Image 1 (cartoon, rainbow, N blue to C red):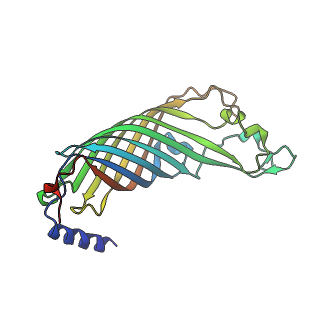
Image 2 (cartoon, helix red, strand yellow):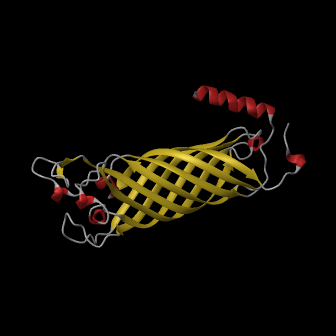
Image 3 (cartoon, rainbow, N blue to C red):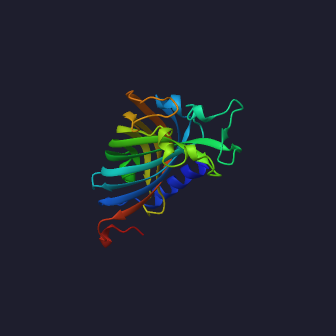
Length: 243
């Protein structure tokens, strides 16, 4: 597949001299997979990520936009709700029977971004290295999953004493390869995102530890991703249409 991609890029580069150099709105939808860093690695394992990243691109390749992302995964290392488990290792529900209780990691972030596309070749404008920095907010929490909904002690509103909701100001560094076809048929980027945040608990009291969590945290994650881009150009000047 990689060899076919390189071959197709070469063919398109021979047929079309340049990509469109007008200002445009780029709407990207991305999927990624990564791992936690810092204090976040003590709570969660690896994660999946799905997000959207609209941005305005100037004729010089400067970018101004935002990124909203949702993270999820199965790995939770923190022994959440440990006080509710029996010596046999399960939670008792309202029917006095064992509950199939699971914990899942959840998270999200919203950041404003600024960056630039550095063209690798003048003949393929806007195909090159895309570098961006961002600033905004990050959140993460533990989802308490009871499919039978028979364990009242972890349902709303009591889940707030166990879900470890955490958030704070965040920043990001993003480096990717950006490709925009001259015929607009294929537009994508693939890269790595580093997200870091100074966070703290957003809950007043943890029921299982019987104390408030006042610790300052450093939470980070690195995510490899691929994003497909829909470019919306600002005008319809026929002189810039390629055939």
